[in-house]
Length: 572
Image (cartoon, rainbow, N blue to C red):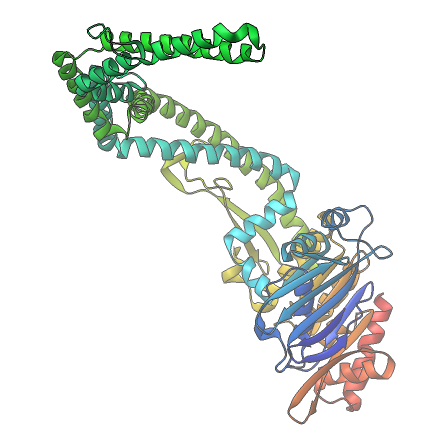
């Protein structure tokens, strides 16, 4: 992993070898930046404050070996990434303005993709995780994670039933609380539908009546115009001497027909004049019929206007035209049917709710049983681990309980509260020595004991649900002496089956590492630069001496450091 312009680190390369790697250094040297860098590569939150003062951006690049054919490889390939000899190249850039970019296998990807890979590749644990373990929800999650599929499958069924129960209950509440509003809406719809039904409008009727009213209102003018046009085309019977278009065209046709034999080219013109005469006759006939059929009845006009007024009343309330009114009526009828069916719907929902409550109670009880069985195994495994962490007489147990709630579900003959993950409250208890009562770890564990409990939990997880890499950030806080040696020894054993990286201030832990990295700080004027180097031989003894006594050259400290290394080598 290469780190540039991140916090106090100017430019450093960190080589995390297989096995157990310990990262040490003085307070403020930048050990935490190593953890932060790995967190960024794994999709952690970007913060502009991480960028080194004066730099435009911070960059972290890493090369991560991934299990062949595993979920991480599949997800990376889905994102378009390419593997480099069995490894993924990952980079993350954070600008001084806080913008973040991620690249995976040569492709730009959303940061969330890195987070998905992290779940398969690395388990990160720090002091904040210790505090998280104090929360009941985290303790329940830890137990469920240990139980695996035994909890996963019934929990999925429970979650589905729980979500449906929430939806049914919400709909019932909505129907009940809005009963008055829904009744008022139904009355409004019913009145509107009855008003429309009384008028019985037809599609397009408003347009037809508007055209008829216009025609009836100008009947006399229309009749006069039609009569005059007919006279112009076909003549006026009262004026036999008058000239009309039909007579003129007939005369023209006769004149051409008379000379047609002398010039065949006139044949076409004669035929066309004949067609004009026929067309004039047809138009004249239609004008006469139009004038005869034209109804100037004022009673009909009054009836049309009255009908239009009734339609206007509807369009004023229910739509801009009759088509819109009919659409409103159709939708209103469907909505009214829905509202009128409230009583029936309420009965259906009530029955479904009770069935779901019964089903949920059975599923919750099954979850409780599975968790109790897993809790016994989990507690026994953690207790055994604590024995190897200088807590030989400590006992870990789980309390699984429910809270009475008259509105809840029935579990084991009691009505108890339920949530999205079941009816159980899970609490991790610790009895640190014989005769001591089992108390919640939030109240009964010291800082050092809590560190060891969390480490024991993670070691148990490592055997049950392993990931390739474990990162511990000062989880040995509050621990010293023999307990620190045992933690180092246990981490070394864990490193035989996984890569383990530990940021520590304890020499007893660092001595058991296969490789020790020193994060050191140098001052150059006003600029602080940190680098990371691998410690071997004499350098490692000096660093352990500093960690032991604060004096690299103390003979006593050096002797103790060499003894620690010898013990660790003998143990390995």
